[in-house]
Length: 176
Image (cartoon, rainbow, N blue to C red; front, side, top):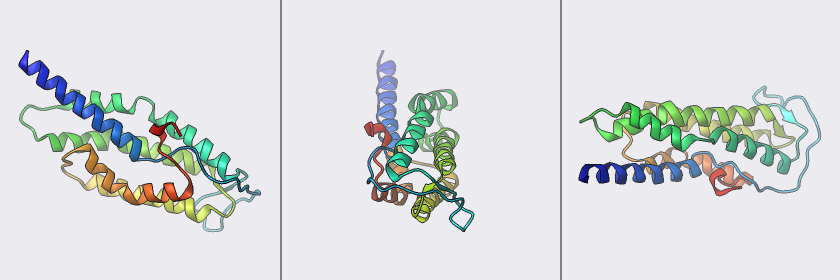
């Protein structure tokens, strides 16, 4: 019974950490101003298309994509860890593997959905900077051999989160 209680406490800690990281890693959500865009084909750099979406509509659609991609993320992380846990192996290595196998593909699919929307006219550089900051975080996380806890992942995405918030996004998990 004591071992079951310890495992339950451990999973509850992992669940709380996963909720915290899911709220921060990709800060999609509502907000923004009422500026609108007029159409265009490309921002000239070939990096991200210009869309006909206004900034508020872009944020709303990106937020919807984010929530859709994130559905079940916490459960997938928990299931991954449960099925890949090796007795005696460092927990930090398991966390790193879970982030690489579950969290990173989720973030990548969110960023692909945002890129597919195209940026509001005039905001291409800001959206490209947000996407680039996420890619830099992902690249660094892929190199990590060990991550001590899920809160540690937040530091990798600090720049991306700052850029998202400056643009007007709020965290998906906050119901944005």
